[in-house]
Image (tube, rainbow, N blue to C red):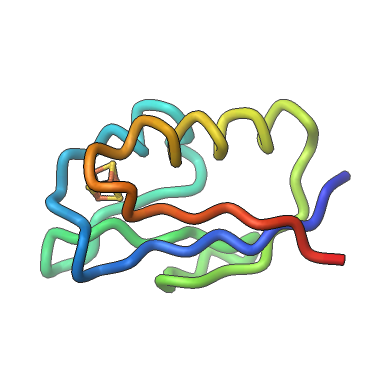
Length: 78
Ligand code: SF4
């Protein structure tokens, strides 16, 4: 398992929803039509620390790469 800090910058998000196509489990749109990160407990926030499998990490990195405004950051947490 990898521990990642996943962030969405709400000022950059344009609701293109590409992130949900890549990692549907981890992104949702909020009431203001911005992507939020879904935590293990189902909570929604612009920043989450997630424990993920290698496949899930790959999906999150793909989501970050597919975001047209680079609103998503994925960082390893020591
Ligand atoms: S892909 Fe980027 S712009 Fe589109 S909803 Fe996700 S975070 Fe927002």
